[in-house]
Image (cartoon, rainbow, N blue to C red; front, side):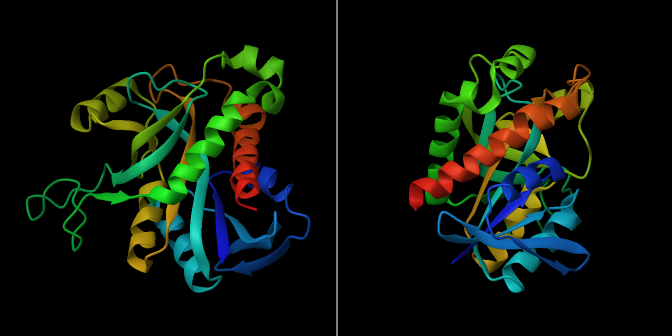
Length: 250
């Protein structure tokens, strides 16, 4: 089986590619797909693209062109749930498009033709991913270094599991995040791709697991040094989580 490793940002993808000893690039649909092996597992790594359409197209190509039998997605997200703070990680149990609204024909958030608003991540793969996340956080000092932990205050980071919401809008204002909390009180975090990937995986019957590192609180106080967080925290976490996930199953 080919496992697809989908990264949201180039720095995360590069951190994953650095783990592969034999990656080869194949260009399809304006995207670079990297095929290789990690711990004996055949993998294909790629950037999702930003937004739901780009992510859905990438996912369809992974399944149809590269024969992906399962997909693991990593990235960053804004934390909106109570107690979800910068440096925590969220493993999705369910995914929903917060900007899907075909009302009054369909209930708000329901995806037309599916009779539902939520798409479930694969339980078994998500359990393995959560264990890899927990192990990574326990070894945060070795993964990130003391300087990054001090700089970002990551002394008690934790893993959360639950609802991840997605929309074609970068949520970075307190009014927006507060509106999402009122409308979707179970939501832990918000991003721009994951629920679209989940919908395509549901169409093809392909298992999906998603982890997002919290880079900010999706409000007016959003972290101002995002590039540093991405390189010193999120990308290192992504690589460490992927390596543990595959290493434990080798």
